[in-house]
Image (cartoon, rainbow over all chains, first blue to last red; front, side, top):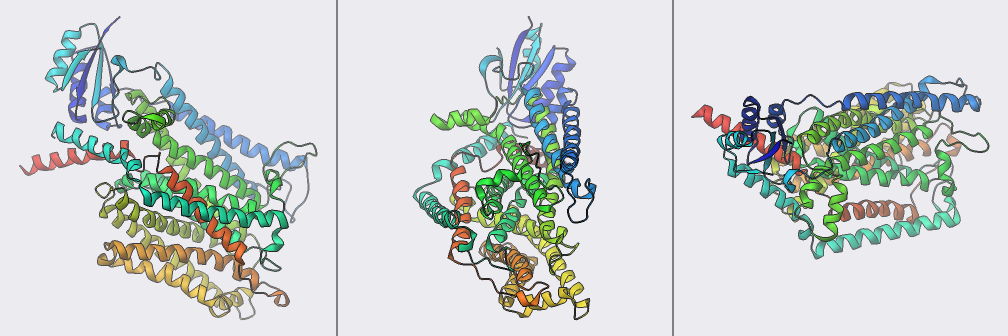
Length: 164
Length: 450
């Protein structure tokens, strides 16, 4: 099992530089925890983009399908002419199509983001039990060469380096 | 960039937001009591309607929609500010939104909660309100999906659900931050609201993507909701209502009233909660510019409505209704509306007025009044002066309707004030991102200058 080394940083720029240095030094998997989505840190980690889009669009299309099915089937089930409009009055139903697309798309987006955020140990406490919601950024290296990772983190300006 | 100064700024920001519940003193509880009293008065007035029917109001043929529908449209309008400020300005990357959007989002949720009550209040038998929703039943009866009133059900309920989800998704990371410093019941509540948030890079990657999608969904939604509300009127043949101008006119009006209400609430709030370093005069200035911009659209809409009506032949009911609005029994309300919504906000073009907080507050309060009058003007004057001259009749709300109107303010402010005890009024995570960005840019500029 690889050792876990934590470096604590006070500013996102320093954390990003340290992450790049860790990756260049081949220090295994690098992860971070931070109080805000600092773009430089996220970019330095070089992880692939979230697949949430595919989930959300699927939900939105399912919502559109429900939005079409509900008024059309309900109107056909009780075919009553109102105001001279056809039984399946598409322009009048567009509102329902749109609202259900947005509603189910949004709820799928929520469910998808929670599921992805909780998956792969997302709900488990961070290594070492530390939290980084306040004023610090934590950079974790999961490496077989912890001494090298500690050295890189210290050189990168970490305020504190420890094995967790 | 100085490491210590960045983390110190983060800590200072977090402490300021975490301290909000502690700063709510005796005055706060007086306001909660006042809101609760108004709410109870409104509830008492509504109980009279439930017990005796809508006949106890001053509604009568041909004015079958009065204060209650005016309140519905007004509160839906108030609810528009949150989504505009949080979603639309997010997509436009308008950084000034960061400090103010949480209050606007809270207003949105409580505004829709208030608005959604009024169509139910207006039902003859409110205990059958669930009939509005499509559900399988023994008689295979379904709502009439061709009716704008059925569209309202979909639009308002979707808006409520999406706005609430949007608010609580934004609160997640902030709740995790506050959980670390809170104690007792608040700590447990923040634990629940944070939804297992640890702030890992993986969580942030999914979160930022989810937020973008929420904003992308909410932006057309904000346009659709008030468009649908405008179709409640526009698809009828009543003069003064039957116009293709209504959807954009309603959306602009909603944004005007919503942003004015945000400013009205923010000005005292930032002072009382000592958030003047976070919600700065710059933020108020940007919101004031937004009021000015949207007011110009509303003024243009009024002008188009007046111009088109005056171009009609003298026998046209549209022209007759317009002249009735401007010169009839409701004329003082019409001209007060024009003054509050068009003339007042024009003063914001003057920098000195815009940056004067008392002047800005007075103008925004006037816009709130003016926008309520606009809805009253649309709802009541058209009905009281419809196509059948023999049925023309004036409508003045009775004490029961006024009780429910003021009660709705009580309901709205009760929830808003209570939420201050728990919900973070500023987005801590986004403010930290902005702070880091500002310091990074500042450091870059300093290095460049050096």
